Length: 112
Length: 111
Image 1 (cartoon, helix red, strand yellow):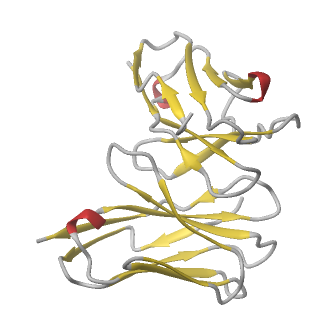
Image 2 (cartoon, each protein chain N blue to C red):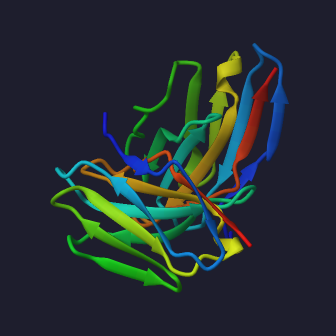
């Protein structure tokens, strides 16, 4: 596609429920990144996919967080048993190798 | 843990003023320094990717400089306009492929 597409744009969920956030990167971009911005904080790295290499999961805050990238394209970030501290804007970005990122418009997650 | 710091945290200027912000980053294992502009309710937008010490980049009224030896970059905006109001983020790339972002400088330009 022309840009990075994320869905849903907004998600309100109850504490303890699982959520899935989707990212559709720019076609041909080999690298895909997930970041999040909690209230008053900077952009926090979560996970990075590059081609067929094993993902860099070093930023995932707990084992409730997981992500996959199917067929080198679409990625899904899953948060199990959501907690209130998971409330944030989750941003996905893609790039050609390590060039500048193109970001999606984000998913605003609110855990109530 | 990589330390990428930006200052000031926020800035309020009048239309027509020129302004600048600072990004400091580790001076070792440097690969690239990115600048992004993030307007409210939009996606962060890439401004510059800088890789060489002494590099200067320009895009319209916005320019940036890079000093990799001392670990800092400046972003300048000449003749600020209300549409420049946004959060300006810098991001450091070292030997790892991911970017480490600063917390940003929030700029507000008023008439």
